[in-house]
Amino acid sequence: MNDDQEFNEVAREVSRRTYDRMAIAQQRFARPINREQLSNPLAQVDAVGWLGGDIRGWRVLCLAAGGGRQAPLYAAAGGEVTVVDLSPEMLRLDREVANAYGLNVKTIEASMDHLPMLSSGSFDLCIHPVSTCYLANVILVFQEVARVVRAGGLYISQHKTPTSLQASTQPVQGLYQMETPYYWRGPLPAVSGSLHREEGAIEFLHRWEVLVGGMCRSGFVIEDLVEPVHGEATADVGTFSHRSQYVAPYVRIKARKTGTSATSSGPQLELPWQ
Image (cartoon, rainbow, N blue to C red; front, side, top):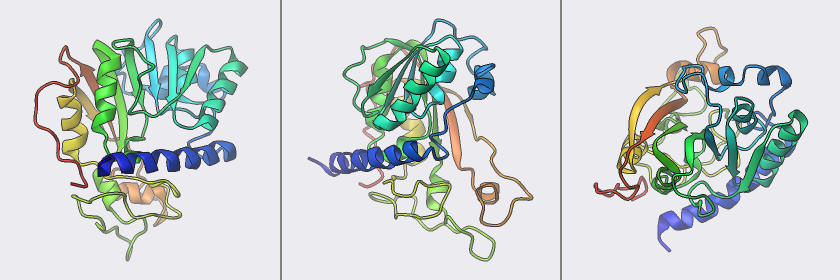
């Protein structure tokens, strides 16, 4: 077993326990949606209009997306939804919300980088909230998504930016410092009390070459990219909104599956810890 396989094995188990605890406590990433949010579901998840305003009948994969929010919203918008998550407690929230509002959501407990239970080309759309930072080898995720999404289908994913994972979680004399090298090897140093990082989770820094280049080499073309704005000029120093004025915490990427195989030709990426 090589280093990335060992890192992935450990990270999966730690992530499962961490998100189980978050789901039980209904922390910020495990707060189910309410009836009002379901009244206009696409407005909640597609403010930039990448989905064209109508996904009725689409086969939708919500990847690493448990927690009672993503899957119910896409189901309410008319999608045929399958949600995959490593945490059984996060999936429990999806089933509870679906049952409460009469939505049809299929749940599967699995890791985002290993989806043998899903058929090739079986989805029109894959929605992937922030989670790639929890695995060492994210290329395996992109290759699995490329396999299960049909040619012409969409892959919409959100990631923590490399800079956000490099920067200090707290200000020094009112400013934030670059603490972690861009070519960091292995798991990132643990944090506590940060809203930009998940306390108790194992996280990895993925460079832009790995995120964007990895998608392209796996069989996708990038159609758009946005950095959701979370900063506020009047925010108190040290808060999530204050740090987000200096460092964009997330990037959201719209990619489309080409007819190219997920194992197509192209250079093998050097992974961040190599």
